[in-house]
Length: 125
Image 1: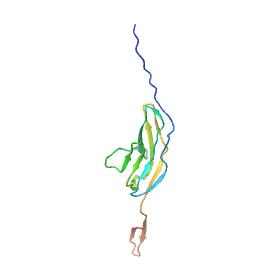
Image 2 (image 1 turned 180 degrees about the horizontal axis):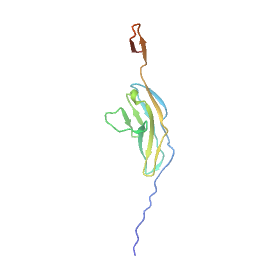
Image 3 (image 1 turned 90 degrees about the vertical axis):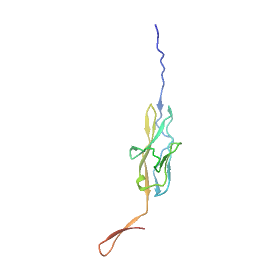
Image 4 (image 1 turned 60 degrees about the vertical axis):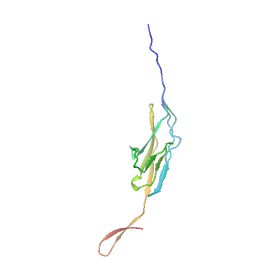
């Protein structure tokens, strides 16, 4: 007679983030840092960021940096960086996501002028 050893390992991921991103505005060319301190978990969860529901890819040529502390840094902000950002914590037990934070990147205002000849032109003001 023999028996197999059984090892039971429990995994979990708590529900609440300690720190989550909040709505913010930044001018074109500016920098913004969004914090994310995930819930406790075993094993420790990995952090991922999403923009408009799509996971942000880590690319060397990007102006978006995923910092070691879990925060997301956007440097040299562009209007195309405007969107809804969420932080997601994942481990083998579960995945949790923050509510989205609306980030707005604003630039120079454009005014439309119509000249008497009917030609319209946009100018920076």
